Length: 212
Length: 212
DNA sequence: ATCGGAGAATCACATATGTTTCTCCGGGCC
DNA sequence: GGCCCGGAGAAACATATGTGATTCTCCGAT
Image (cartoon, rainbow over all chains, first blue to last red; front, side, top):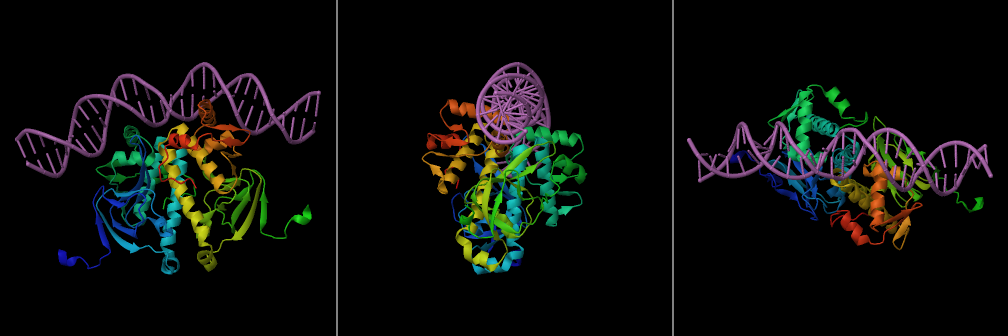
């Protein structure tokens, strides 16, 4: 077993609830996640929490760090994580070289945030959940981690609540309603979407939203 | 009068409701706004609208365009606007030269979006309005457009509703309550904040949020 | 002067979502 | 085998915010 691990020092591991970056900490590298999920979030006074970004396998965490400022929101592992750590200097290398992946990460992340502003500001609970499930499925699919209409979804209903700006109770309620209408199957951390087109309509997504 | 206008061809003007960029259109330049306000937004099916970014004098509109992708959300003028148009090529010049202003724009914009995800997802109406008014005042102040505790605020209550994810009626209601408590004075497109510290507390802002 | 329309301010009422509390189930652990 | 505990599910009730309609004021255009 041990002998199979390549001797690359920039491979790092995290356990659930472990921090990838704390508030106001200048991270010394970007994480390219190979396996597992993480999220960025902010806590408010009375225990309210809002998750502001999800990092899935294949994602670069956190693109904005390369612009050379400390993270103002902590990033924490949601599952076990295996990642590769790359230095994040504003070096010429970064600007010249990895244009094909790094800049795309940043632009995707920016656009995804803008889409979620619309969802959190103006959409109903069912629309929010539809948006989330579609986005996660699509991102997993693009990383080759979807199988047919299914993929893993290692989030608790409380996590989902903190992403969608709802309460866990209402997430549960709304998921029941969606199940009853045959819109999604979600159990044991596994998601299945019988009809992507219908769910897209319910999510009230703009035609231009890529969900990538 | 006319003779005072410098013969620079990259000076552009817009009137309220005029588009700076339409959906899915590749803008051919970045606008450096010298006077007036604009916003980026998205419309939903039944007339719902969510504003996802505000552009004030001094702002670069829209930082993300320089990353070389079409705008997926339209940008429209809220007031009369005077702006300078700069080409936005992914040219070496952009990367090397304007690091001091352009990259800061992009990072600020990204961070501001993340802050608004928290506000739209988890905060009450009064917290949202406090966040907005504080942010606008602070941004105006940094551009030298605030006078003491006051600044211009050329938004209708409907605009404010579409920024904060509320209804115009509720914006009005909540502003009345804030006025009654002496938290803000807002009339005739002019804002005054008697006590910034108190409003900051009410906004439930994180200590790290710069509002810049 | 007059008209018309946009924006602000209110009121009465409706409802989506939050709060509190409870039960049930399965998995890890001693 | 029994114990804990986190997570899903659910019921009863509370409320912040949305809906729809009306009035008033202020300007700008005719």
